[in-house]
Amino acid sequence: MSLITRVQKQFLVYWAYTGADLFGQPTYGTPIQMSCRWDDAIKQVFLDDGSPVFSKIEIISKNRLEPKGLVWKGKLANFSLSSTNIVGQAIVGSSSVGVVYDVRASVAEGVYEVIMVSSTPNIRNTEVLYEACA
Image 1 (cartoon, one colour):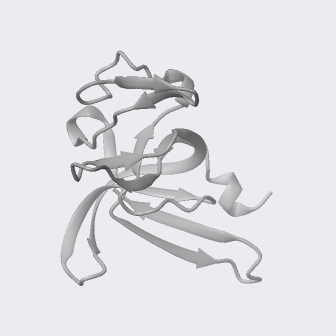
Image 2: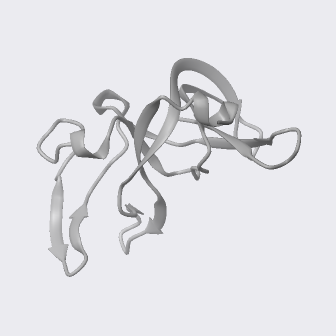
């Protein structure tokens, strides 16, 4: 078992950013659960344009998270549509593909937006460790 796999003792739910709707509101993909290392740590990071921002969460994973995606600490089975973890309307409709989620980033509610992603390969370049800040 690799070091990257051994440190992933926690879980997160991830919604990939898929774009914006006709009104300019962000849209997100289906939530997926993945293992990770979730650290509550304030860290200064730099965006692509060089501007400094502070993140509250550092996530280490074998899975790449993309900027503008949303993360929530926990297992998907524990994510309740009726809980306060979802901001605003929990279910905005349903279709042939199932429930359509309306998830908004809110630090107070436990859902965070990914603001920066970096990657580091191991010495043999057989695995990559991804770090995301939210």
